Length: 264
Image (cartoon, rainbow, N blue to C red; front, side, top):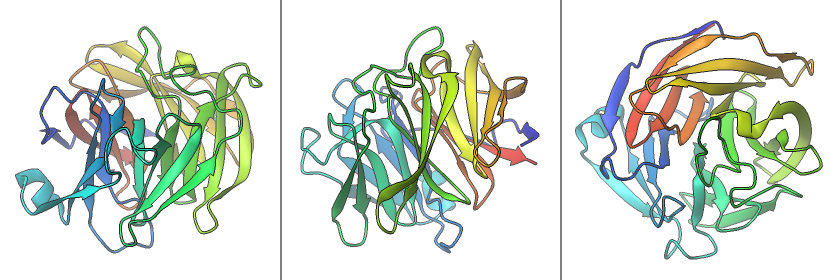
């Protein structure tokens, strides 16, 4: 990745600015022909959620029309509820951290069934959140998806709080490969995957972030010399991920839903 555009769209969350934590984006799948957009807000201390709002087109999303609120769990304190803003939608399945556990949940929008996958030794409940100057609570486990599939990012005590990256086989719902980086997770504000490369951001000021780090899963090489500017409208980033279908980055920025074009 060589550069990132200024925001190509900025929209206030349909739930309002008070919902500062959550995620949004487009269904991430290189094989899907559906143009489905989603917004997943967190309630109860910006920690838990149980609803995802779906739009069948970008026009519907921008105008706030023709949406459907899908119930992921009966309540935000249910064992299948969402914890933290690391949610992503991949090929019709909503993936997220399960309620108060070091597990991934996968909610199939068609069957309405939930699968679970344990993340051994993953720190949770603000043990290893995204930070920099201030921490974004409940960001211990973060999901990403690119042209190579589904990924999960987290940290462990065994890796000294540095970021751990695992690739998830969505068909069998298990972990196929794991990489340990030397990037301290509390030193970054967020991270995302592009073509098997992990990118991390850090805080510059209220209106700017910087992509400063990359880890290539193919070569195992780390690059700490990146300096790609990323604009924002508020200080905190709850969710940031890349979509290979339209080559855009999607950011949930303190209740603002933003998108950027990535250049290669």
